[in-house]
Length: 521
Image (tube, rainbow, N blue to C red):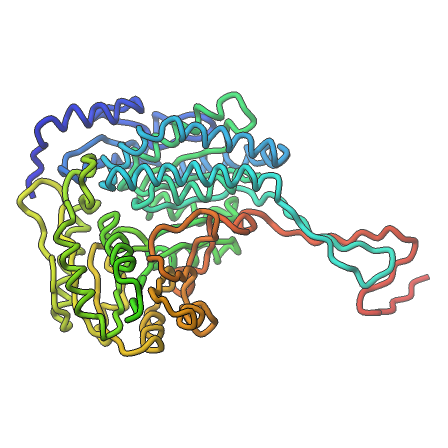
């Protein structure tokens, strides 16, 4: 695939990188702890690429296993003081961080589009999500409440309270390089924890830019040393972070295979994990649905972020009476999708993240056809341009195809036909993953069945809304192979703290619970 840079793009790249003190082709440090970047990081050098052109954007100095130990030590030392800062004051730091991201929203969005390939409107939305979770966390800093429980013993009070947990290790993926890790660090900080962040090696410049904002905002405050950054390979950096007993919690986002490794590694030392892993998300469209509404949701869900969201719509389940009509409308809509430079405001679908992702797309489609799937739209690698561009694909599949149960992380949509809601729900629940799901119907009884205990088995289940686009106010996460973790809103903050039950005896006797008698002179 050609890597010739498009005319004028070099100046654009220099401008975007220059906003964060970086230059195209230059070298930057991907290790920071103790409030500053470490220029002597000794890990293997890493190249990061522009997925629109394939060109090298910059070189990154990565972390060694020893760098990880030092970063964890710095975070562990910082925790001893940070946990003593009153929670509302910790919230004030997070408020300033939100303002820092608000001021740099456009710069960060353009950097995300450049390095990640996400179109500008989605990139802006991602930075806004960081701002939103900061706003939520600021309010939460005054609501880290326990409860009082009625005691069975006279003159006794039984209460539950929450304490800071310690160092939180955050392992994040390329597709949401700041939003999803932001869910973690915003909550962790107000909860009194410190952070060691291992971002994806596919998007290191975005995390370095975020770390710069952390340093700018926290310099000279109680939070100056709470953030650490360690960029590097999973086998070196990730494994060292997961194995460190000084890190009581690992928040990990990625594939189901990644989650299995993290879960095993953390379990070996009795640590905790918040896992948000693969999705194989389905939208069901019933015959009575508002088809125009459903069409918009399916197109965004399947094509948005070039099909590289954990919540991307991967399966479309159509009730038979409207199946062909809806499929025809979907193919027509796909034909209108502008594919190209994500920095162009008119583009609706940018490139895949890497050449490896293009290979996965091609091999996935080939396997689907081998198993009996029929491509009804797309399926081509766009070799007429530089970068990692493909067509979004629609495949008529059957439920007995083994690959249907796998998540191919690309813009490929399986289409199925069913007779009834019961068949559709069974098909939705038939895969190992359980992240997001959506039902389009105008029938109240169908909607309620979908949301009942015998309906969708996913952590996110929507009615007349697609699989992508969750708000931060609700807890985000899925069931089964998706990992069971919850992040962002609702009471997800509890995952970043330790629960403590307290009994206070304000009387002069010592009655035992359950009426136990144990006389001692």
